[in-house]
Image 1 (cartoon, rainbow, N blue to C red):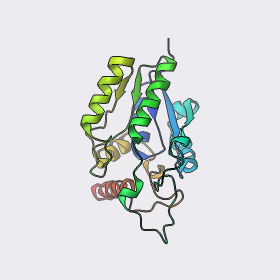
Image 2: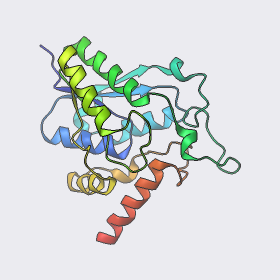
Image 3: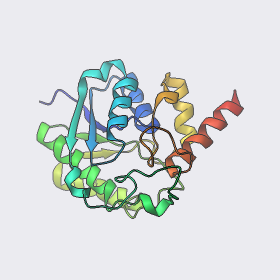
Image 4: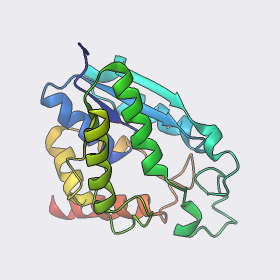
Length: 210
């Protein structure tokens, strides 16, 4: 029998960190799975994840490296931009089948451990334009994996906006200000990529509500 209730795809970003605290408060025993897919900010993400994770999960971190898949990609998620010179647009951040890769990797790892649940903090963002980001895609994938592999994909925030996640984070005592989500730069948030835009809007709304 598996000693864990589930595996959470974790990156040190706001959404997955809030979900980690949410699961911890509910008493779930969860592995934090960090995927190194060759992203230029991998070191920053991992450092942040270790810092912001719930205390109960500090020893539950696992790292899987799948970077060879994207080593020839031209995405700005792989090749870091110079914020002073490069003009980065949303299309520059595209990585083919990234979410499919993440969820299938986590599911394969879960089944190898005898773990039944995979958790993802995917939210309903207006900036998510990848072909494997639609609700229909996730629903079909959930059905496929559960029917043929016994692994259940759980996305409890799939109908949430970023501000709703942020509000929940405050309620749970999550150090959301210390999370890191920028897709363009590994040291200083660019403020313009989809993740940064969503985050800034959510944080500004929180400030206005205080």
